[in-house]
Each structure stands twice: as C-alpha cells, then as structure tokens.
Image (cartoon, rainbow, N blue to C red; front, side, top):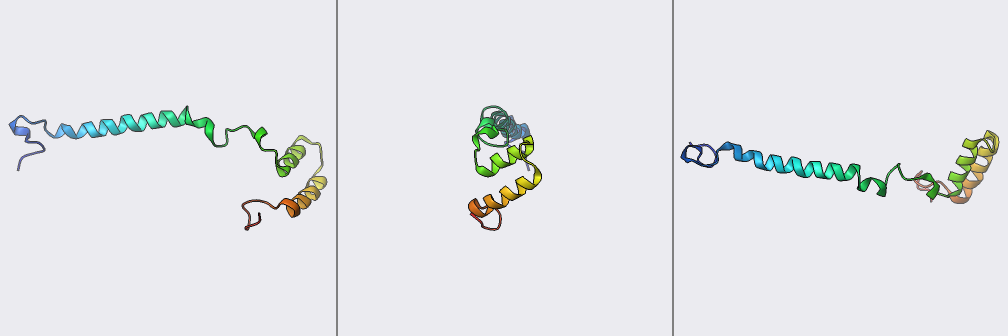
Length: 93
C-alpha cells in the first residue's frame, strides 16, 4: 500500500496534510485577533455603565457612593422591586 498521494512516485507525500492545518491556524489566529480588537467594543462587561440608567442601577450607585445608608437602600429597593420587578429572577418582569 502506498502512502498519501503516491509519495514514491514523486507525489506530494504526507506533508500535504500540513496545508489544511496551516490554513486553520491562520484563520483561527485572524478570528482571535478580531475578537480581541475590533469586535470587543460591541458587547460585554467593558461597555461603560453610564448607558444603564435604570432605577435599580441608580439606587445601587447612590448606595455605593455613600449618598444613602443601608436601611434607606433596602427600603427603596423593596419599593422598586414591587414596582419594576427584577429581570431574570423567578420569571418576574
């Protein structure tokens, strides 16, 4: 049995399998580079938080900055929870 592509008859031999591997590495490297540079600003945790002006976020920022104390935070959070509900928890909308 002869090897891949008739190696003994002057064919390319088994090293021809390296070309698809090299192309896969080039394409994978290009995608990795694009994900780290160009596509990075479109979504994810690196987006500035200033875009989210929901009442729950504003309340969290006020508590974190020390404008309101813990009791005030929990009192207002319970009111906002009743009014707006938390998204993603137990089906509340």
